[in-house]
Image (tube, rainbow, N blue to C red):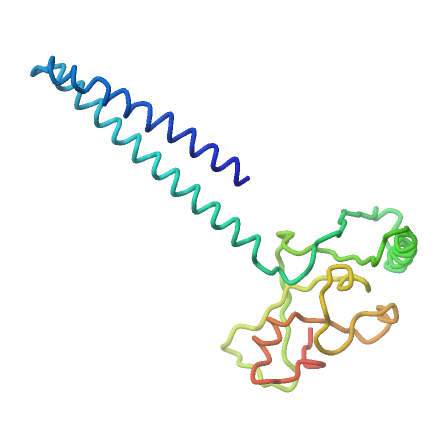
Length: 216
C-alpha cells in the first residue's frame, strides 16, 4: 500500500506538474520573442495558469500521500491489546434448523473445539461472536452494584461479546484480575463477565475493585 501511494503520487506529479512545466520553460524564449498582444497573449496566460494549477494539485496529492503513509505507520505501531500473529480466524454459522436449541449449539462447539485442539501445531482454540475491529455495533446498559444511579445522567453502556474458554489465550490477552472463563461457566450457573482495563479505569476510578460490581 505504501509503495502504491508513492508510485501514484510520483507519476501524478510528473504527468501533471513536471512535463507541462518543462514544456513551458523550453518554449519561453520563443514565446517572449514572438509574443504579441491579443489572442496569443491570452493563450499563453491561460496555459501558464494551468501549469500553476497542475503543480498545486500535484503538491496536494504529495501531501495527502505523505499523510497517508504517516498514518499507516502509526497504525502499524499502535498496540491493539492483543497479538494476532499466528492466529487463524474463520466464520462459522450454524443452521437454525439443526441447532435451534442452545444445548445443541453448546454441544457442537464443545466437540468442535476439542477436534481443533487435537490438530498438530494448534496451541489454543477459542470462539467469539465478534472479532476485534469487526465493525459490528450494539450495546447493553449496565449498572454498578452499590453505587446510586443518577436518573438524569446517561446510563453506562458496554458492547458485550459472547466468547468461549480459550479465546483470551489464543490472542495473548492476559487477565489482570479475577479469573478467566472456564468450561464450568454455563447457562445454568451464575452469569460471569470480563471487562477490559479501559472500562475498569473509566467506571471504577480511584482504585475501586470492579470484581462483582457490574450488573448487566
